[in-house]
Length: 76
Picture 1 (cartoon, rainbow, N blue to C red):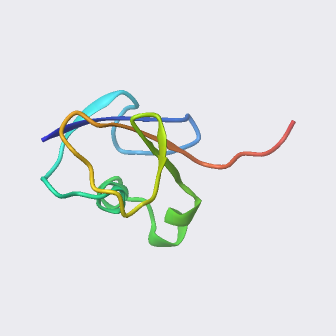
Picture 2 (cartoon, rainbow, N blue to C red):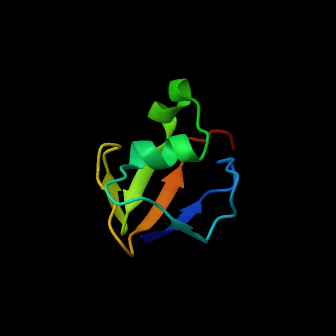
């Protein structure tokens, strides 16, 4: 099944933002983060939004979902 992944520039991933990913049915955001090689110790820092709504990492993804990943930033 396919989902679209977007993320902010500070998030490093092996695929480009805006990429349509082919994932297995039943995947959660945690599975997606593992696929993107996010270290387990850093997963809690990633905020996930599915179809423009904040989503827990345990949320199951479905065909056509739009996933946006963000990481905290600071500065001025």
